[in-house]
Length: 135
Image (cartoon, rainbow, N blue to C red; front, top):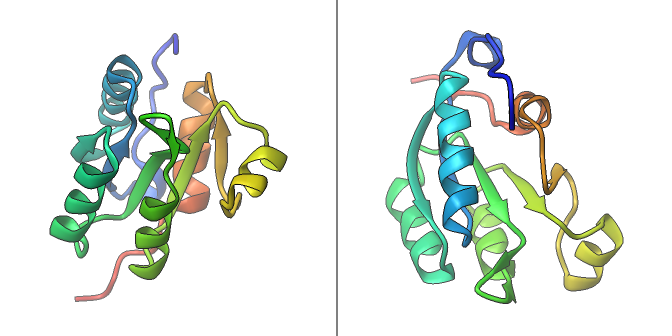
């Protein structure tokens, strides 16, 4: 991920995000990139149990989740299901191809392949995040 984009948050709104990634360096880089793009990372975790806890604790605050398809050698299907039930959009971040993700049981709606670029992350934010709720 090179050359920082000079952009504001999508649609001028700051998104509140979770990063669920089991590779610490990748999670740190993605979190840094999201902050550079003007968004708030409200939590990161690399385990299924930790991810589920974060989602349940911050359910009403989360605009979008970046989810690694594989956490500690297992498909992150339970995390994806929790997000689906909570109606929290997510971007699947994976080195797997769409066909392999479908074979594993994932919905491949919004996905970025690893390694991903800054532009791919920014585009995923625009296309996948849920609209803000009117208060």
